[in-house]
Amino acid sequence: MLEPLLFELSDPGQYNDYLPALDVPEAKLDMPARAALPLPEVDEHTLVRHYTRLSHKNFSIDTEFYPLGSCTMKYNPKINEVVASMPGFALAHPLQDESTVQGWLEVLYEAQRILAEVAGLDAATVQPLAGAQGEFCGLLMIRAYHESRGEGKARTRIVVPDSAHGTNPASAARCGFTVTQVASDEHGCVDMAHMREAMGPDVAAVMITNPNTLGVFEKDIEKLTALAHEHGALVYMDGANMNAILGQVKPGDTGVDVMHFNVHKTFSTPHGGGGPGAGPVAVRKILEPFLPTPYVVKQGDRFTFDYDRPQSVGALHGYWGNSGIVLRALTYILRHGSSGLQEISENAVLAANYILARLRGVYATANENICKHECVLSASELRAKYGVSAWDIAKRLPDYGFHAPTVYFPTIVKESLMIEPTETETKVTLDAFCDAMLKIAEEAASDPDLLHHAPHTMPVGRLDEANAARCLNLCWAAPENDSSCQNGTPHDAHREVPQASTY
Ligand SMILES: Cc1ncc(COP(=O)(O)O)c(C=O)c1O
Image (cartoon, rainbow, N blue to C red; front, side, top):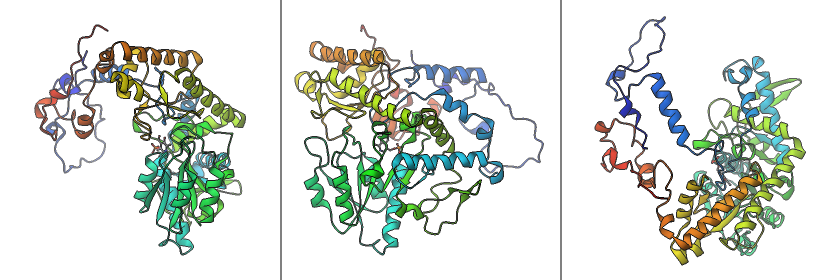
């Protein structure tokens, strides 16, 4: 059943006005009165029911298997939330005197220290608010490093393999660099011959995702970092896929100079709906002077924010960053300890290879390798034979109770389905998922239309996703006032009525 919009539930006069009586002089705001805004008016209970009902219709990691490749949708242990809700953490204010938030500063300091150690590097910042901001921060430091050596103007290029995450070239371009793309070889690793051709005195850095977006560990990483260094370039590693190699490899030991973590992937902090996340960056000693501010240091037995860093690339945002997310990540790391972190990557890789082994043959695979923490399948054969696409498979999976994997990424594999099970799923769940994928492949052969029109059991069918993304204010105005949609389509036209289905 379609859920009514809050506007359709609106009953004028029913809103809850819980503001206490004024105990300060009234001040006029230079904005329209609330009553003039087209806001829905509902009582608290209706509001709670509305959002609770909507939440029940959502897929989430706490209700379903969520194998969204590249996103590491692992279970978020509740102990992280317990710790983050402790009043000393939850109620602190970023402008409090440092003497009153020593515990908080110790958390940030310990996170800096431990993440640097996990990376095999010398220092780390926990300031970046996301993986992509970590990339931006790392590249700013690389630029500052070359500038400090009088080579800022000469080094204008970043070399990025085509198996890198899409944010890598975007971050490089955002930092003002030009990007040279390097191809992958038949094993899904960087083509070293092509890499050699791409190098030159104008290269500021090689930016590599390892394991890459094909789920493959770059076996030539040491040769690659040596090659970059020979040319005076640095090596940035996108470490968002650390779930595959935690406790197995320290990127610093392979010659990497700077890397970011996605704590919201690797260390189990929540990241549904786009955030908040954190993308701490670890660096080699040569880059330490350029770390962003504030940077937490220990002086004697006290912790303090160090803002006096003349070569720093500066602040990335106001205050301390997404410290609550960093706290959750630290809780997770300390709870597991170093041997626990090792087990995480072993089990994540095992789970991905189990799925790969069960589905290989029925689905085409990106290459013949075993994979790291995620496997890339392709629906290209099913498409050629039966006209069934990766998209159709993704839309059919919710009928079996599973969130879809990532589709059409990595783009270098046609009709790709990128599956990342993570270490937190049981074998029973992995088997149920594989059974569903095998059944779907049978359906593709016997009744392709069943897949073309999937899903059949969801509250809504296939949505006009492009229009939903382009017409952001779709549901913001009351239906009768909705003149805001850019293409002028009436509000209700976007509300697809699901087809009655016999499936
Ligand atoms: C490999 C990789 N790099 C970078 C990013 C960007 O991280 P964020 O979405 O936190 O900006 C992601 C996101 O999942 C990723 O998977």
